[in-house]
Length: 424
Ligand code: LRH
Ligand code: MN
Image (cartoon, rainbow, N blue to C red; front, side):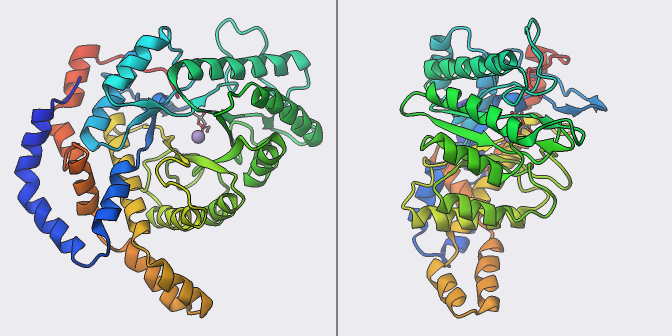
């Protein structure tokens, strides 16, 4: 289903007067509003192909209907999100859930919607039908050479699919680890995994990046072989200049200071990108900014400071991806909310007066430093993000237009109430 341009313009016409009033109000207190709006228009977030259907847990899955039945329909849904908010200009595929049968036509279809292909994702955390050797006891860490080779070959195959689609990066998340003390030799598991990643790294095209995603626990509950930022950095440093760490916000132990991790990985030039989501307990994969919005702000504050310190391009030099799962919300509404939260938080981080913050830090003026950060965080930047959408041809209120357009109802009529999308 597509939302026609005229419907978006009609929607915007009805909201324009109020939008202008709000924009004038917030803009009057700000410096370089045009510069900020330019950065917001450029900033694109990649949508995960595995999160366009309803997610679930081992306890249950409650499908909402109208889910995409093919890669083509997934691209259509991301195209709809991008038409509504102008900030979802890329899709991140997961193999084998999204094998492009005709890469040429898939690429053309995506281009039709103004979409690029972001990082490709391999999958050695589940045994596929017809798979010869099981990953029950791991993949690249496995004690058996033939299982490790099967996993290496799969990752190289994923790179091939990505090359056909114009992707420029591979995300490797390994569920490998152990559930009980004594089950695993940690050093051997690390060495096996490093050797496997080195073979995959050697197969990377010259202009590609490899993202090593770490995770503290699940599905293994005693050790994880890429378990935290330090281990991921160790792998990425030993692999070479094309290897980076990937920070999934839900992959940390409780109360981890993720903004400090981000600052240090950026300082080392080894931060590759993000899987944005939110969580209260574990890898809950909830809507971005729905539980800990201030933590997300503190992370973006470090990103803006660290990227400017290295002269990096905010929009293109890091991988901005969502990785969420929708157990109780309409997947497309959830993704609209997540992209909105990312854009609002990025805008707030751009408002921080860096010079005055450095002065406060140099003067150990703790109160002034906090006031500068919270002043930006407490600024209502919704009109600025809406203006960036308007300039990108999107809707002033994407969620309202999505609902007014009865999109889910249309998708259910078109695809059926019981369709199940491949993915988590
Ligand atoms: C693992 C993870 C990884 C994906 C998967 C869908 O928890 O975050 O990034 O491969 O979710
Ligand atoms: Mn992830």
